[in-house]
Amino acid sequence: MNKYLERIYNGIIKENPTFILMLGMCPTLATTTSAFNAIGMGLSTTAVLMFSNMVISALRNVIPNRVRLPGEIVVIASLVTIVQLLMQAYTPAVYESLGIYIPLIVVNCIILGRAEAYALFNAPIVSFCDGLGMGIGFTFSLTVLGAVRELIGKGSVFGFQLIPSDFSIGIFALAPGAFIVLAFLSALQNKLRLPSATNGGQEVPEFVTSGDVLGAFNKTEEAPASEEKKEA
Amino acid sequence: MKKMLNLSSNPHIRDEVNTAEIMRDVVIAMIPTTLYGIIQWGLNPALVVLFTVAVAVLSEFLYEKFMKMPITIGDWSAAVTGLILALNCPPDIPVWIPCVGAVFAIIAIKMLYGGLGKNWMNPALGARCFLLISFAGKMTGWTTIGADALSGATPLAYLKAGGDMAKINICDMFLGRIPGTIGEVSKLCLLFGAAYLIIKKVISPKIPLVYIGTVAVFTLLFGGHGFDVTYLCSEILGGGLIFGAFFMATDYVTSPITPNGQIIYGVILGIMTGLFRLFGGSAEGVSYAIILTNIIVPIINLKTIPVAFGREGEKK
Image (tube, each protein chain N blue to C red):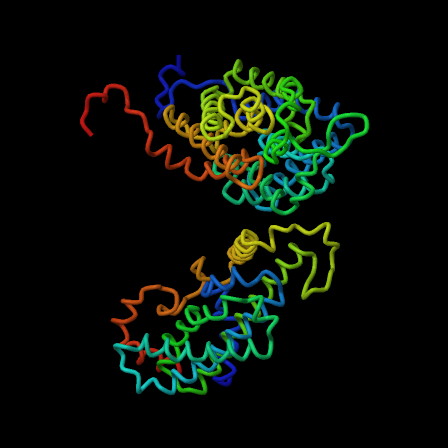
């Protein structure tokens, strides 16, 4: 398979950020109150993710290793500001309903995770495709969660009323519902032995899910070699 | 003789009582108040009780069948969960709502944690709060008792809204001639059932008495009515406190097992209920107080392990 397509496939299916890597849980839980909000969040994150991967990859030989986190954050934060202003100008409704979660994309661990695990060691174009794949995977998972929650919680999907609102179970559109739905979907995944970071079925890249920032920092010396080997 | 020489790990002295018998006693104890609710409000409460219990038992059966686990519906605990949940619903509730709650109680709160004895939250109360958040309007639509059933407020809600104290009738509250959920209104029937459980030694009166006492003290101190017997009685008898204290706070699985722990548990329950009722937005707070206190029960158990016999003098 073409390596660009392989990256996109990887992001959507093999290393789906929400269901398999279990990354970015905060926006996942908070913004999936409806399918529409979920898509808005997913697409804005995708936009940031693609370009942050590309820019960080292009700058990977310029950013000194010791200050790479601040370097990455500066890039990501600038992109988030651009996206935020664009959304405020052109899609004010989505901007209003997502509120604080748009600026919080800066600290979304998917973006930093992909920068750390992939963009720092790979060429710009393939990093861009990696960001695109991850972004589509994130958008897809968020939309599934948002649609399920909206369907049970409000009886509608994308605002189309499918079940009379008398029969909707309101708690699913509120915060507890997010935890319940996500837990049920993950439990189903474990039951069916699908790969996931929560059941050991997926060999996850150590940088992404270990949460061991210091360890990752110490290992960066030999890490590029191994990543490049995988590419070759 | 062979039995005498049998070596085994403790406990060595066993009672013949099993889970099913205890749970059956709990069901028997709730029969008077269930009947009272059905007699007062007619057909709908009867259907609610019937369907909720049936759905609770059925969902436990189907889950265990699907997961290839041993079928445990014979221990009556699912029936108790369904019954408590049904009694916690208002009499006019559409029947399908408590049925949804029963599925949630059994599957999400009990079975997913591993079944009876492994759930940390009281399933019936967890489901009640689930329904309360989801169907706020329908779960608090009270019907007053009488031929031309009007909707009204429970005595607690009435007092919270600044109602006239003189219109509160303690006798009515005790006998159950007030609006409320199907099973909570008749304190006479509830106390009758509680006495049965205490005489059969199914529950110890420690948790309920400490709980109710703490609510009484809290209400006297912070209620803002001074020592007013009517106010005090309506706080104790007007809502779900008696039902909650005797039938839900004493749940074996989700209450502490150590003697001191039970007292601490009762005090915390009382303070939480008082806080919710007097300073919270809603007039009632028993359900939330119990499920929130359930969370810290393991810590209470750990911190109150009694000193073993013969070790009293040892230094820690």
